[in-house]
Amino acid sequence: MLKLYNTLKRETEEFKPLSEVVKIYTCGPTVYSRAHIGNLTAYVYWDLLVRVLKASGFDVKRVLNLTDVGHLVSDGDEGEDKLEKGAEREGKTVWEIADNYIKAFMADYRDLELVEPEVLARATDYIEEDMRAVDLMREHGFVYETKDGVYYDTAKFDEYADFARLNLEGLQAGARVEFSAEKKNASDFAVWKFIQPGERHAMRWDYLGRPGYPGWHLECATIIHKELGEPIDIHTGGIDHIPVHHTNEIAECFAAYGTKLSRYWLHCNFITIDGEKISKSLGNTYMLDDLAKQGFTALDYKMWVLSGHYQSTRNFTFESLAAAKQRRLNWRNKIAEYYQSNLPGDRDAMDGVMAAVENNLNSPEAFSIIDNANLSLEQWGLIDQLFGLKLLEDTPDISANSYALIKEREEARETRDFAKADELRDKLAELNIEVNDTADGPVWRYIK
Image (cartoon, rainbow, N blue to C red):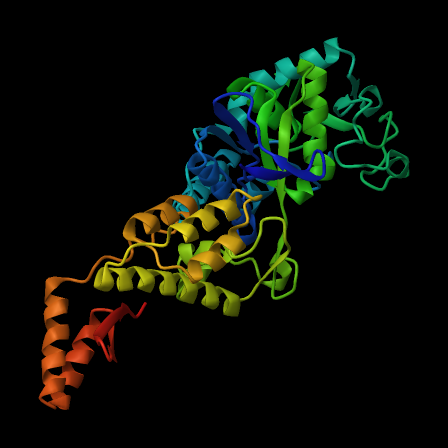
């Protein structure tokens, strides 16, 4: 029985989909710069969600959006569009920036062995749907027009504060957004922005007789409506999405389509680096390429991420990453032990692993069980299906030539020709093989 923590209800509950196909929406990246390891953490956790659903017998249809317009630097209604800022930084067009960073994100996605979504939805492909959604909100009386855009009147949606447990009276004092004289309520937000005279904005579409572009939150509601239909089963994102982005999505969906957006909401927590918030000014915005320069693979990082629970706060250090890398090597050498013993696997251990991940995606508990289990190759294959760590693929049985070298070394030791034995040991080390001598004979393992 799969159980998930539902932010909507603030409790863990049994997952019951609406149909035989589980509909999932994952808030994707804003593609104005390279994703750092903190950004990528969420996608590792939601990959686990998809894998656990499939292992539990569900079919899945997932949409991941790519935000290439409308996300302002304030995450609200003020400031420069992030794509425009990226274009200015690099001397490229906004379209080039979006294309380049979508390619970079998907390259990282594949290096992490993440299950690709059934639909990759680029925000600029849904502009007509955005306009139609705003039309519907206007028809239903939920929005009003100002000189700089079309705004959602949050006072018209009685449940606006419920999802994030917002204090709207506090917001009226300007706690969340700068109060504008044209806004009816401080919590009101733009569903469509008009481009002001002299404002630089390359991505623009004519709507209501003026050039403009969609508000950031709108794309998710319209993409879900077109690609999945609401209500969906599961909506995922980071905890920072709760008070603004997801709250506004819920409001827009109700105003345009008269429906609930999602039945289950899952949110992952942040990571820090060396105890500090990830920040360019601190120089700790590591990319996967930066980890590679230190000798770590994307899957070493994925191992580190899944060693913690998606709802817990995590502190990344290179020491903890090294421990995750060693843990993955230890698992691979468990596979190496199986090649040499061919013992049956521990069925109870696999039952425990599944029980752990079906209990709100408890990967840390599952990993602890795997640490102490003896598993068959078939079971390691199931572990790979659950976590996407390429353990079997990266741990082939050694070649006949390597086995011959091990045998030759053992014979040299038996004749006390230790110089030859040492020479053969060095040859094996060049092949990434270490041999340990035991009372039952030589046992090999991978060095890295």
